[in-house]
Length: 221
Image (cartoon, rainbow, N blue to C red; front, side):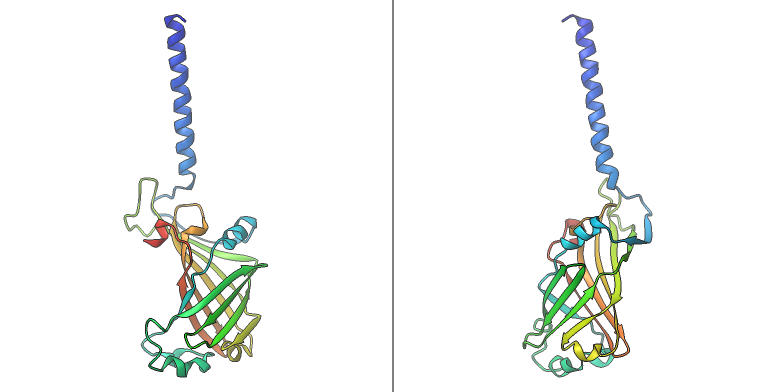
């Protein structure tokens, strides 16, 4: 092989290397977010998001959202009030046990207090969801764009409530289920490390919150 052939081979190898570098870089940045990103829109729940939701597992505990007013602002959970106001309901023991399952396009959330009082809800998944992705400009840029704050918001009617939820659902009520987290421009199940759940109706007004079972580094920060 002469000098000219060697030079041609080196040039070819360098060209191939540059193509590979730019290809990998382009692929890596396909999910990169831009500074100042703010997206809010409605998304049809297609097969991709069905798979994503199927991979979001609820952690085993949940908290009842309360303010300094305690149970006075809560409607529809009257059977829990005595237990809530007892000495046994501390910050640690006040957590509910939770079994959350997503199956057949519905969530079944089953709650249980430390004293064994139980209740469950069936939440049919709507056809669409709302998505929020925001650069909060908190210096979270790791070199591939900012880490975005994310929400997936689902709203619908509650069709079934048992146990301590039953009395508040004697008339129709609606739910809002929000998965919250952080990540890049693409969506992954591990981006969503937290959830918030609200019920509103003529005889029901309360909220719960908690974590998912698997979180990424971004959503845990």
